[in-house]
Length: 94
Image (cartoon, rainbow, N blue to C red; front, side, top):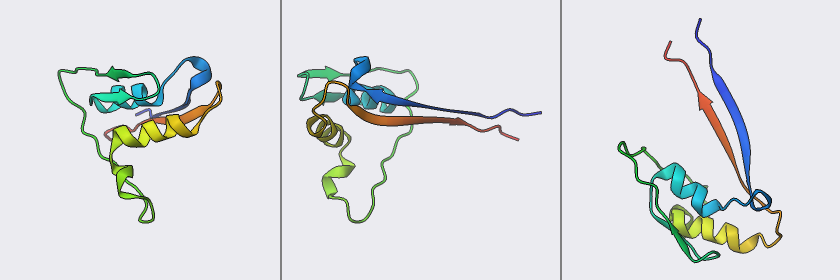
């Protein structure tokens, strides 16, 4: 019998996390954080396949991963801000 997996977590500044660092890690891209003035790059042997989707009414810059997460960091000003949510789903091949 195959087993699936589903988990969710929050990217939160209160836990010392950064949205740009999390996005760089998950996408395998090199992203610069304007808030912390730090460049995050996580090299991998196998580069993940990534894509971005946005609603039709969203601005064009929303397709730029670096700018999108820097805007999120800029808008959320509290020290315990919830910056993003991550969902991990693993479905069986069967």
